[in-house]
Amino acid sequence: MIDDPKKILVVDDEAQITRVLLRGLESAGYQVRVANDGRAGLETFRTWLPDLVITDLSMPGYTGLELCERIRQLSEVPVLVLSVKEDEPTKVKAFDLGADDYVSKPFGMAELTARVRALLRRSATPSQSDAAYEAGDFKIDPQQRLVEVSGKSVHLTPKEYDLIQYFLANRGKVLTHRAILTAIWGSNNTEQPEYLRVFIANLRKKFEPNPRTPKYIKTEPWIGYRFDPE
Image (cartoon, rainbow, N blue to C red; front, top):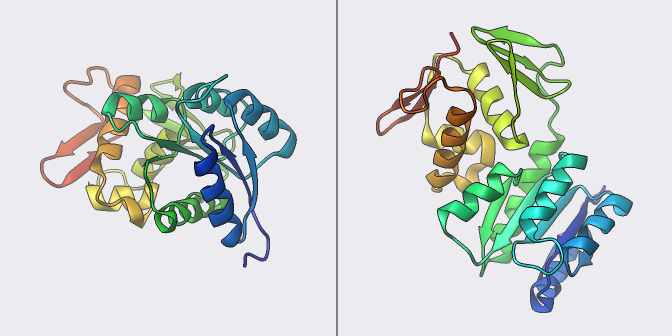
């Protein structure tokens, strides 16, 4: 059992799925509440203030994507998306709206609880420094989770912020795909490079002068990436 049980909100309109998640997560020591559509999920989120949200994509009321977007306007708690949709555009949209992880249905309860533990662990880890610092064209403010590039503010999702902070902390180094995936998504995701491709593409669109010929995030073929903030 968990000494200080975290609160997990499950939002899904499939009764069988919610029963499985409720039983499995409570057995793992978490407090769990269930909502059967997106609107009810948002209301429960506002009143109960969970530590993590698990949401389906296709639901009545707000969809999972709409719910994720509204949650991000209120909080930075981890959001894990469940869906039978495995196409890359859907994953890109979910990540771009602030999702932290994406699990395809059907799923194994052991894998899902491992991902929940990893998300909660990372969300509870304090930043290395509360002081703002600069590196080349980049300035980062950990207290407000803000990033400026060449004097212009760049809006980043929570996971994009984690990625750019990791790059800044390791600027100039060649970082392997596995190292980045482990640092940002945890050891359970080292074989899912599509996560990384999606986020690198999004970051390049947001601050590279020309995303087709990156100035800051350089690709090291077959190895990973190198971040040069100058």
